[in-house]
Length: 294
Length: 255
Image 1 (cartoon, rainbow over the protein chains, first blue to last red):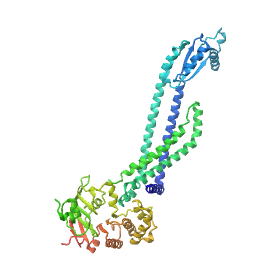
Image 2 (cartoon, chains in turn red, green; image 1 turned 90 degrees about the vertical axis):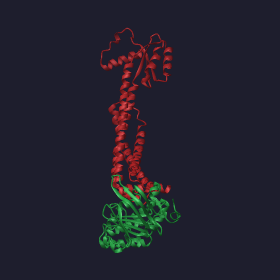
Image 3 (cartoon, rainbow over the protein chains, first blue to last red; image 1 turned 135 degrees about the vertical axis):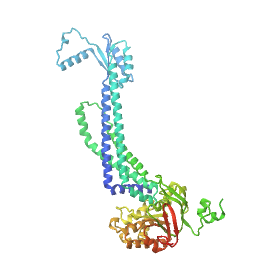
Image 4 (cartoon, chains in turn blue, yellow; image 1 turned 45 degrees about the vertical axis):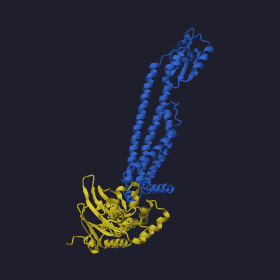
């Protein structure tokens, strides 16, 4: 058994180098296709991160009665903060609200007329951020019933529109990634088939001298895996080179820093290696099958 | 149904229950009532009966398309007979399990008109290839390859690649490869078709020598001069039928 595996690997290695031109062509195709796949995968992840960034922007603003005491407010903040749907709660006092408003006016270059007011017309508020904006209704109805809450800004329609949009974009992203995956699969399998067909005579001779199916198949399967492995490693090397400048450019371009791309590098590596080796093996398997004993 | 005689004397009788074929020694090839219809509708063999005892030297003659190649492909179970029995060294090929096919193929060495050598491998590697891909331990490969290369007289050319060899040398390499498994039968499909007459004769001499060692030889050929000169058994095919099966015969009918 071990001898057979060693034999197959040795033959695969020989086969790869003795048909260097065909192997290089297959590996190159593999690199191009895996780069394409990895590119779309990373894009998909950036897209998903951007979408959840947009969704995180959804904020429930509840105005608090002026009569509410500090203890009541603290109790409310603690209670809302404890809700499982809520990611963060922030209390904005009346003074702070006025300060923010003045800042905005100044930033927009408008005349500040608030100084003419004899008192602060703004209410204090709690600003609530959600893990998942689709949970809006639950949170809003819970907050609305609080005695010290004066009113909750109704953003249901806006949130619904955002969710519809992100939903469509997500589905489209997955569909495109799936399509690219299929294209990559077919092109790689076809390339490996060409490499196998180019050696039809070798397989024919093996058959005629009485080689068993396993002895014909496995060296080619290992060779397919080898092409996949080389292709994947070259692709990952290239991606590693461009990863840093590219992500820097992306951050500068979008100007949205909080996008979480931490695990994408690892996921891409797994995807590229898995697809490369997996499709290499699959391609070799189906291509050789044509030549086995009928 | 089965008579005692068939049960004891004839392998073929045992398989078919019909004691029709009488025989004296072991038969390595038995075809009984074999027909082959290809999926495209061509009837390549019709009701072929052929018994080849061990150690025989048989010429298979006939025009192109007469069924010679089909007959050979049936023997190595590259194709299955549509009807009838094909028995090689005791194995009915129709009943052979897929896994057992390689074992039967190793009893048969095949030689083609176009040699079918691997162009990037040396003579030695081409012969060793047949053993490697059938899982022979490396320690047994070297002596076996050296032995058959000596037998066909190519020890000196062992390191050369096929393109550096003459046609005759290439065909001798192919014969060495066919022999390296110690086959019971050598099937040669027009082995001299690409060779000039002098080289052809050398090759025939080699096949005769191998035949004298006890290997049964089945050779399809158009070479009338060789067939007529050797006076061996001649089986003539035409349109898928055996029209003549004579011992010590010539290429053409001599009535």
